[in-house]
Length: 337
Ligand code: DAH
Image (cartoon, rainbow, N blue to C red; front, side):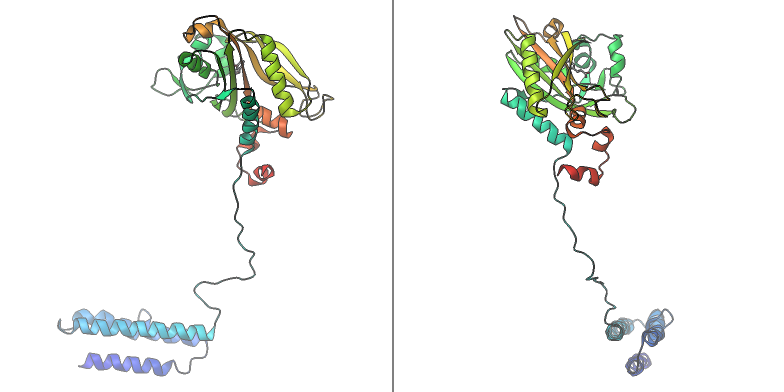
């Protein structure tokens, strides 16, 4: 058979012609002549369809194995000519790859410090839904429709749901807790809150709050002060506290709590804007409407408070910009390892 003789001849010629190869260029020339697109083997492979059908498989087999043989030989020769030319190059001068162990986010660290303090006072932790209805987020908290304080809580409404929204604070969980539990209750409620805020150094549309609620037979404003003053001292060390009258629809009376700036000791610095004091939370005695709206009957009274976790974390670490918490910049986060 002419074709089989030709295959043998090509094989013989190939091994003959690689004997004296000395460099990559010669090697490549041989490659082109034999297995390049127009090379001897490739050309024959293309003529297979013209052959009588009984010898086609055998010819195909022989040509393909010859092609494999040629490729192997050329690869061997290539390695001999340039031993560093390997499929996987290894650069031994590169430094080893470091593995990073994860660690807690600074907001998580602060939240856990806060939890610890309230756990030690007997509070337990409860969570509520991030998607709330208008009733729990506003109306039941004594914030009726068209009440001006809804303006400050502009948020993201769930389209087509009628009355569902992303909760603007953790206070709606007060209603849920009182609805489902008979006092006494002492709880803290951490979680994400949402507002339609523009992003700047102290605002972000998603942020975290920790709500607190203690209801019992004779909880007074003195208990509110005692618990919160104890809390700030344990978190920040020796600081002065100050309670200013304020207004929240769901507490009466209401107050805001300031602490002397832990960074400058009250002298005035960039963190406290030269004031010496920093506002850290809102609080007050639970408004009777809250008990009524959550179906609590009987002689109960209590206090509630709400704090922004980002704000506490900024003060605790002496940071200026809330955006650092969300940028996922490893150079920032690594400092809290
Ligand atoms: N919910 C309030 C806010 O987001 C914070 C707050 C103030 C919570 C007073 C309370 C409270 O429980 O008693 O602005």
